Image 1 (cartoon, helix red, strand yellow):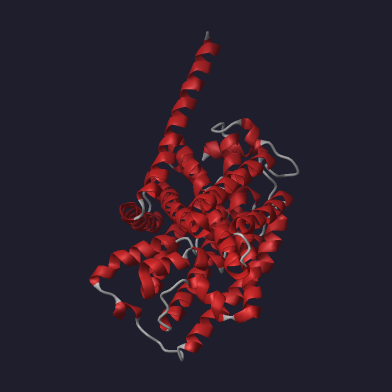
Image 2 (tube, rainbow, N blue to C red):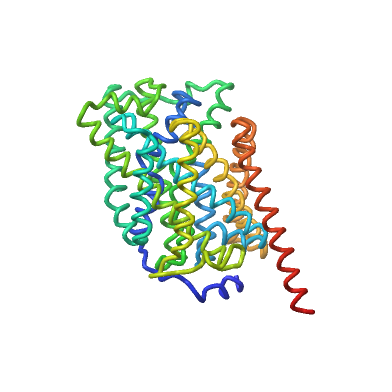
Amino acid sequence: MENENKRKGDELKRTLTFKDLFFLSIGGQGPFISLIAFGTVMIEKAGILAVLSMATATLVVLMNGLVIYYLSKRFSSGGGYYTYGLYGLSQRMGFETGWMYIVYSLSYGGSLMLGGGYIFNLITGFPPIYSITVVLIISTFLVLKGVKISSKFAEIFAGAELIILLFLSLYFLYLSGFRIYNPFNRVTLGDISLIWLGALYGIGIPTGYGSITPLTEEVKNAKSTIGKVAISSILIGGLFATLFFYSIADINFKGNLASFLVMRFGVIGDILISIVAISDGVLGGISFLTASSRVIYNMAKDNFLHKVLSLMKNNKPYVAELVSILGMGFVILIPTLIAGIYGALVTVGAISGIFNLFIHSSSNVSLIRISTRRIKVKKMGELIIGVVAMSLSFYLLLNTILQVQPYIVYSFLGWMVLGFFYLESLDIIRKSQNEQEEH
């Protein structure tokens, strides 16, 4: 942590409060569209057992969120998971975590943007490629206007969407006559693997807190605020989502969630859902574009990436933001052109899930290592949380690798290996430069 203190000389200004960060985190979940983007696929995999997939996913995310709660109390500089790996484990692991986080943040935010474009296309017939381009342009505008403007947008629209989500859940329970049931009674032994596979997509729903940890150096009283926001947003997002899937299982729904909602609410519903789709896609975009740019910025400050990526203007790392925007465009537009918007949604969603598990596994190991440096009774709780979170994430990661399409795994492993070769090449260049200076 001494190294972390040396790094703090050139920090961004601390302007974000608990409220700003909370709504950015909820916005990062994309409360409504994340149910479409991830929930539609989760229902496809787990059927009426999606409620158990969602509950499982919430448990996994909560354990990982508790890890972030403890780690955030130790680090107040920016970079989030990258910083936890860098100072909690090693420079190499820190780089690899940041490297993987860049793809995670772009693919997670991208899946929300694709979800928004998908719903907008279903309702209006507007060409998918144009729908997501509109979402990308609005997100780009807000990101470039600054994190404070983005947080105000999130406060208005994310709050409204939580209310809509609660209304929908109560409406579906009303349709079922408020029938209370035990979802575990529907489970057979063969369903367990399906529940876990559904959970891969479910973890994408309440993980908006993954977008706030890189913003640490812009948060007031960061060591206290980050952890509290992470836990609050997970509990609210996870509980609302679980209630939603419980309610639709109560009416025995197992089809395409997006099509069902569009057909159910008529013209007025179509208009409202169209607005929510675009706003939610934008919420996901601004949250994770901002997050990825802060990781790139901090990696550049630490000389892992080119120094030009750490340039600032008006308290914003504008070059890193532009690179993130270009990366997001690639992540959402190319798969859509190749596989269509639903195919892109499934692919990008799965990629975000598997990268999510990797970066959280890294942070879990960071907490375990820090907690075991000096064994104390008060740290035993942290150690237990770290071990449990690591076990859950590692099991889900292995289960996922065995069950998702091979090209998803190849993308994951390929990006990891590319990062390894990049870092090795960087080390060789640095050693050559040092040897030349010595001579």
